[in-house]
Image (tube, rainbow, N blue to C red; front, top):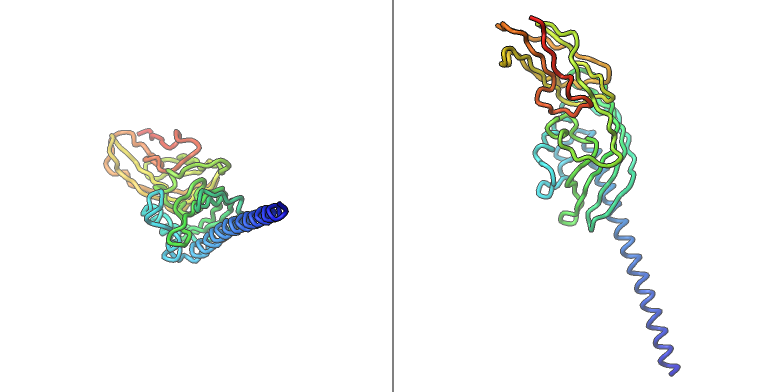
Length: 260
């Protein structure tokens, strides 16, 4: 009887130790996975700031990317061509799990300088980065929230999924000092804009002049646009962001008609 009791105690004790060791291994494994994701994010930041396009995309999975991979590629390529990163501060808010996948939530603050206009622009945001394990290595497969990467390409930024806690300050373009040969695009919103701004001039329903300004536009600043009206026999209409590619706080003040 005593022998059976001793054997039972030994068995229970061994099970307790095994369970504890198992839990410890799971905890260490989860910490290891999260640590790997943080390191990958840091390496992506380094490649981004050094304008190393191939290095950056070595950490992105083309096959598992949940958004349009080529649009993201074009957006990062354009970021590196048209803007110099002056300073980036990041704060990791939290990491959540979905099996082996990791969601990295980051608060950030960036300052850029346009390589075309030398304008200095700043942007703050809150973003979510989704990483998955691919052949034993973690790679980025999706983004959401504010545009931390790829903000220069409106085709990428327009359809970015929103998340709770993201910064909702937006630019707002309007037209000022309009004449038959020039006008100003002004940002009267609450956020600097980093990216392209399309414009066009129409006459009698036909486009007579159009273009794209890609120098970025800070809050309360403006840029003068010159154009040639050509043969126009009716009141011309000037439109900024005519295809609604840029998310603005007011989408209804981007057009004006001239007295003729």
